[in-house]
Image (cartoon, rainbow, N blue to C red; front, side, top):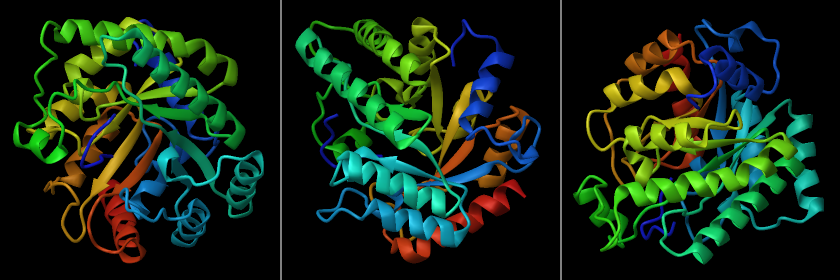
Length: 313
């Protein structure tokens, strides 16, 4: 997920244990389709699919209603899309999902840990801790987090021209940024563990655009409460080798579609191939749609669900 102006897994845990966390993320379902080795995962839709950072926010409850009608299993809520964070509103959303048989599976937030200044990193840590609190109140078992980026390239369009390869702030290195990310996420782990909410680090535009950096961060934090959110549309080069690197340790997947042409870019993805990679990796979590095309979501989200079903058929 991106703004045009952007502001903002574990190696210490065994493979079997990490896949267990991924299975738990899938709403504790006993459905055999969500178990390792299954051919069909459970499908969610991100509320972002209906909004794309437009001036008028698309209501989360309408996303829940549409998701139920279309046959999704869950809904992912984008924090920036919310207009009301009161306990009453959070309870209304929980009730709306329950009555429609949907799980609220992920709470997606934005933060930026890539800063030489401790006060800025502290602000990002507090924002993440607040996101964990909101997720717990909503009953979401996971929070999507970002590493952040240098912000030496201001506009996203310009960042795309260099395929996300942003130069560091003068006087600092990529190793500095990875260290900041590790320390900041470690500071959030106690809150995540206490709330029973996993943090999911995405290969988002920034430090984790490179899968090697993402893995270094996850390994450095070394906690069962930090997993990987694999976004199949966030690789500027050949996506398949990168997907293959992350799939065995992914606990959640973002599935991009671009009906009507992408808001920011369009990728011609081989969805069958990607589904095969995930199946080979015994992926057991949710696959969540991020429809990022310009076509109206009322038609494009339904088409996207068909693409998802066909890919994993």
